[in-house]
Structure formats: structure tokens, C-alpha cells
Image 1 (cartoon, helix red, strand yellow):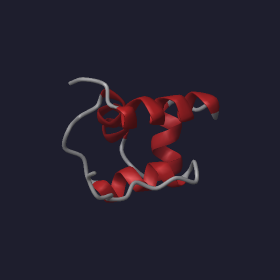
Image 2 (cartoon, rainbow, N blue to C red; image 1 turned 135 degrees about the horizontal axis):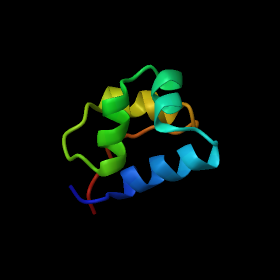
Image 3 (cartoon, rainbow, N blue to C red; image 1 turned 90 degrees about the vertical axis):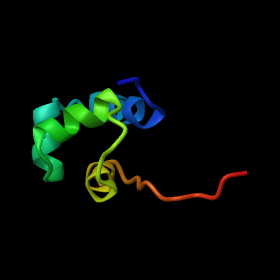
Image 4 (cartoon, one colour; image 1 turned 120 degrees about the vertical axis):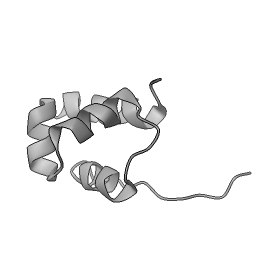
Length: 67
């Protein structure tokens, strides 16, 4: 799995907030494996769970039109 902009951003936010993957999983209400998959750039993740994680950092993932 290749790193994506989303995976790199989540990892950067996590480190800026001084959280381990385990702490991020607990605080956001998702599993540790989900956080690991997210940071590794897994191509198929549930968008609602991604938004649960991003909500801790006051961000959200939304669909946008292609240009």
C-alpha cells in the first residue's frame, strides 16, 4: 500500500497532537487496526470511520467534483 495524502495528513496530525496510534484509536472510537490501515494508505476504508478520526482534528473528508 502506498502512502496517500490522507494517510500522511492523519499521521502528521497524530504526531502534532502527541498521540500514539493506540491513543488516537481510543479517542476517536475506532479500532487500532483501522488507524494503522489509514496511516498505511489502505485504499478501501469506511468514510464514516475516517471522519470519526478526522473529527478529533476538526477536519472532515467530503466528496468534491473533479475538474
